Length: 257
Image (cartoon, helix red, strand yellow):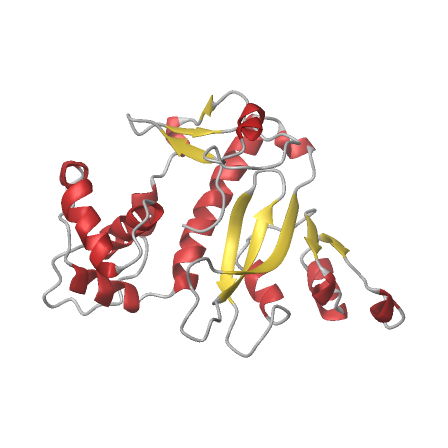
């Protein structure tokens, strides 16, 4: 799973969300000990509003042919996500993690471990953007639930939009795959993400990314200099959003808004 998140899972499977603060967002595993003091008390999320990552990933449409299918597609996505978060870097490593490290836990959930070939075929048939849309939508809901419980509706939402290289995606020519992400300023949660096409840049992906977020009414969107585009400003105004864009000196004379 890409990006930082605001939820944790205890040994009983209980989800908790950290209250939002002005502290710099950082995951609890940060090697900088001082940052852990900013986490604050953990607050229980109401049971009625919970959806597990497995339930979310089970919503993904199965791109495989129905004949001969033995493993649920959502379960394969779930296993792969957990294995990668645990450090797996190949199909074989994911299969080994599922068969050995997590075998008992998966069995208790009614999931059988697939082999490496099954994992490879399933993941090759699914898009990264499809995965990000599911997880981003789920995290957006989690943030909204937590914000409502902590009176966050009175505070204006802010979303940062920026491009970044995917960790571990460098190929033989040294180039990494690029993604465009939308990050909630307060929560430090990635709400949406799309891949930037080869031989392209961030600019065409701006509206494509924000289209994955349902409600931008009253939200402040921040972005760096490449996005100081009239088309971007008009798009955000059409969605009812505000914006803060970096405008460099050479660009300022041509900006008409």
